[in-house]
Amino acid sequence: MAKVSARTYSRYSREAMTLLGKLIRAARIERKMTAQEVAERAGISRGLLQRIEKGDPKCELGATFEVAALVGVKLFDIEATTLNGHIRQTEDKLALLPKSVRKKVKVVDDDF
Amino acid sequence: MAKVSARTYSRYSREAMTLLGKLIRAARIERKMTAQEVAERAGISRGLLQRIEKGDPKCELGATFEVAALVGVKLFDIEATTLNGHIRQTEDKLALLPKSVRKKVKVVDDDF
DNA sequence: AGATAATGATCCATATATAAAACATAAAGC
DNA sequence: GCTTTATGTTTTATATATGGATCATTATCT
Image (cartoon, rainbow over all chains, first blue to last red; front, side):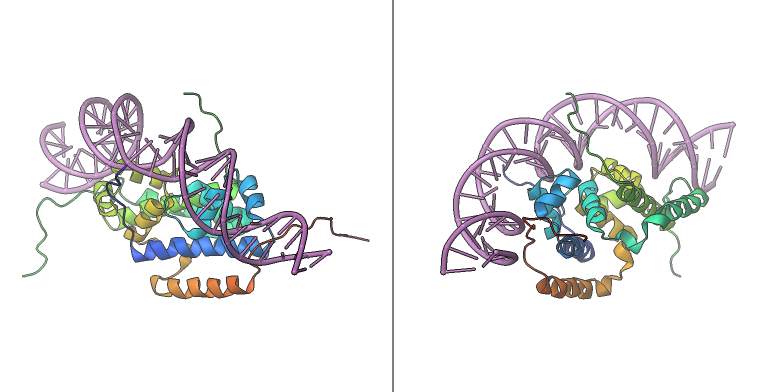
């Protein structure tokens, strides 16, 4: 009771969530799949699917991605076959980067 | 007490989540941002950020996308400026599609 | 137009994610 | 090598998302 601190979102992420929801809904209808049907296959409730299609920020990432995959919405515009490659590529990149980020104690002489 | 029904995920969505997490972590380190720093700016706890970077399916979509936006990971490989256009485009598409999907009562004569 | 099925919306109980704190480990910079 | 800061990990209390059920509305198909 008494909502304490509603979370806020940047315009970009809000729009991204809205878009993802609409893409999912469009894909589902194009494939002539019923909400009930998709929800069952994804192992979620119809209510949650509705919220996902609305772009509700409070949905689980897993449920959302699962539904997206189910109706054929490509995340990152990346093909299923190449996903692994991208993961490895990112891991390689990470291996080269420092393991932790250290903040400068003294401010750098930005100007002067 | 007694986990009842662990949710399952398809390979594609699992990999997509893993990739997103790694992309976020790589981007954060590249930008020399501390975990604490990013968490604070996103309005989440450091623990949650860690789970996001691990690709944990149980994170909120909103928190995940917000962090992604914060460190500059592009969702859908779409620019911030064109996101709105894509939304409208999808809305137009949706307008042309049926509002609801009706299941065939009788099975269609698929062959013969 | 009528019948039927899908979707939209709301409510409640419960499972569970989240924040916060504390501690251990590891890495960065001098 | 030493110091300091970041990250990894665990625990606990609390906020909250989720599933399920129900009802209203709307769209599809005959």
